[in-house]
Image (cartoon, rainbow, N blue to C red; front, top):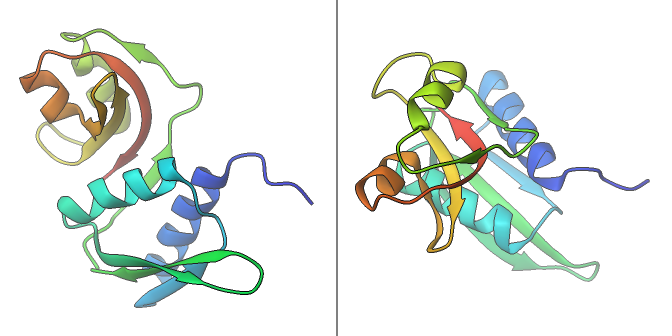
Length: 130
């Protein structure tokens, strides 16, 4: 069976594990985009850590949860946002002002919407977390 959106799968596993009170999950989904999104989530305190381990079938990601995550998800379709237009998407995906992050892919790499605003960059919204 093929996986349509590996990032969505990882984020939904993460949210389900958080709801169940698990402290760690392991997933086969592993890519540069997934690792970049997880690194941003780690910087913002939504996950404690993640590590890549090698297995016979491929590389596995092991995620340790911090207990700070309320909700996370993928934004589909990936909306293109200009530098000054993040407010509309903040209202749509985040519960309150200055609470949570939108994860954006820009010409300078993956970053939060706050960093993109500071650098006056636009991009595509990939995911959100709060």
